[in-house]
Length: 215
Figure 1 (cartoon, rainbow, N blue to C red):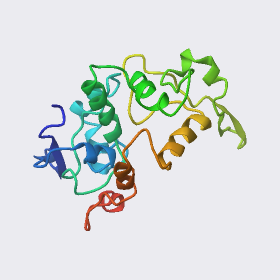
Figure 2: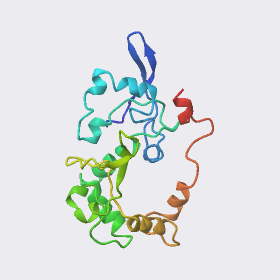
Figure 3: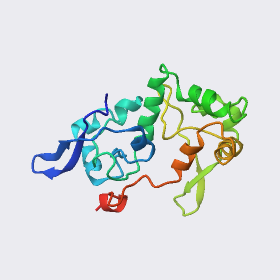
C-alpha cells in the first residue's frame, strides 16, 4: 500500500518542491528492472533536495526499509530508468507475501538449497557468521599522506530489517552456483522463459534514461 498513488516530483517553485500524483501502478517488473521511478536520494537532483526537507529527514535513520525508502517518484512508473530503492521494495514484497519471513530464510529455502548449497549459507548478518567474515575481501582508503590504509567498509548489520538491494554476503562459489543454474538446460530457480526475459530490453523506445534525468 505504501507504493500506491505515490507523488512524482516535477520541479520546484518559490514555495518548495512541486509534485503530481502518479497514474500508473508500480509492478514487480518495474521494481526488478529499476523502472519504478524510485531512486536513491543521491541519484537525482530533486531527490537530493527532497532529502533536505523536514519530511525527507523524517525517517532517514530508520532501520525499517518501508520507512527509510518511502520517498516520492521522479517519473511515471515504466517510463524511465533510475538506479534506486526498487530492489529494497522488492524485498519488502517478498517478505510480506511469505508471512513476514526474513529475506535470508526465504533465500535459503528458495535459492541456496535448490542449487545444492549447504550451511553456512549466504547471510545478511555477517557479524554472526565468523566463517564468512574471515573471508571478507578487505578494503582500503586514501590515507592523509597519499598512500592507502585499511578501511573497514562493512559497516555492520541491520538487526531489524533486511534490504533486497544491499547487504547479502556470498562467496564466489555461492554466486557461481546461481549463475550455473541460470545457464543450465534444466534450471531449478526460474522458468526458462523467465530467464530469456532477463536478457531482453525492459525499456520502451523513448524512455527516460539516467543522463536525461540528471540534467
